Length: 142
Image (cartoon, rainbow, N blue to C red; front, side):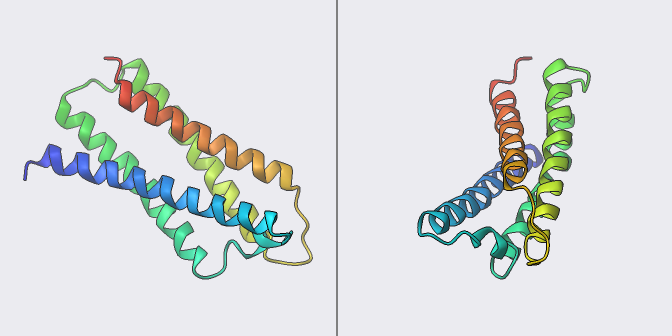
């Protein structure tokens, strides 16, 4: 198999896994909240959901590496505006995801009560960043 096609497959699989894991967590928490369990988010870092967080982290680590190699094989200059914008959005999205993971991990302790609106805002910001990146990558305004 050609390297470019293999990298493209790896990049797409990582992106799809990231979105599936995130949507799985969202659906699980929303269904729990609708069922009347107000502490469902406190269990978001317990097994098997810790595996989902680790899988999302691995996907977040492979995306910039595979993306850089795709850009390298395609021969695009790294100074293009859409690539730079996607890189900045990725940095902001990944940092907000890491901050979100730390906040959700802290929710496991019953002593600490966090602001759930800020946690939700972090999650929404991270999702918006990654959807914008997917839009930029799909459009590829060269």
